[in-house]
Structures are given as C-alpha cells and as structure tokens.
Image (cartoon, rainbow, N blue to C red; front, side, top):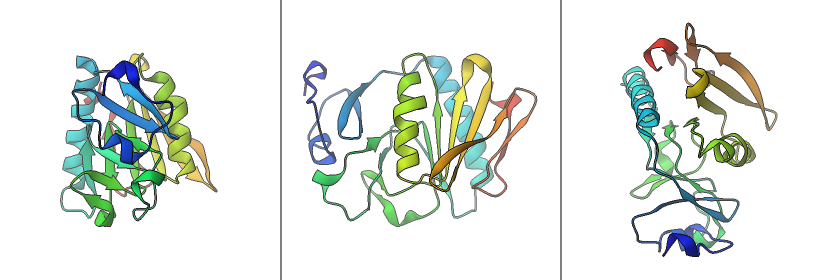
Length: 187
C-alpha cells in the first residue's frame, strides 16, 4: 500500500495485508502513518527499556520495544473487529496468554510513549483515549523536552495523573511492583 493512499477506515484484517516499508497504527479504526523517530527519541527509549528489562528480569512481566503490535481487543475477536493496532514505544506484559508471533492481543500492564513533536497529538490524545478506553492500568508519557515522565493510573475507568517526575526524582510504577527508574539515568 502506498502511504498516500490510506483508507478512511481499517481493521487489523486490513493492517496485516499492508506489506511495505512503512509503519502504521490504527486508532479507533482510523489508520495513521507513523513517522520515523529521532535519534534522541531512540536513545531515551533504549535507556528506559534497558532499565525496565533489568528490573523485571526473573519476574512474570516482560517488556517489549517498538515495533511491536499491540491489538487492543479481546484476544478472540475476529481480525475484522479489531480497530486498535498500536506500536507503543515500550509495552510491559504480565499476562502472556495474549502473545503470539504477531505481537500481543489484550491489555498490557503498562504502556510507555516517548513524545516527539510529530507524535504529540497521537500520544497525548488519541492513544491516551484508546489506552484508557481499553483499560490499560498504567500509562507513562515521557516528555524529553521538559525531562519529565507523567504517570497516569486508571481509576474507575478514567486516567488520573498519579505523578509527574522530574530529572532529580525516581519514576515509580503503581502497577509493576519494584519498578523504579531514576530519571537522571534516562535524560
């Protein structure tokens, strides 16, 4: 498929037929072309991933780094009914029953997105709402320009900003016991 010919609506069934060199995400059945991340974005994702992987070593939880498809749907939903196919920067999965060779179908324990100028609307609005709607219990938004991490925790079906961590603090997960990351090691 050519990137300038995205359909107005798409499902996972469409997504798996797009065999080209572009990356896509589908949010609420609307497909989006994903821009290549910057070098600084990738450095931050790499540092976070290493810290998380080290902390989770030996636990039932496992981190994955993009590109990694997360299908927010019941894992038994037919492909034509899956309207959210996302590639979070980092996904932490504790329930491995939704893993397959294509990615993950279900609700991850934690999702982390690193905001860049090209992804701000997607990360802070569209994905935020999709993750909230599907019950992702914890969502971290990393803001490199301000050297901050916002931790959003699902309470009664709605995200509440639990904390904002700055450069001299340690970001702590409310969902994953023992997951604490010194911010100075990320920025």
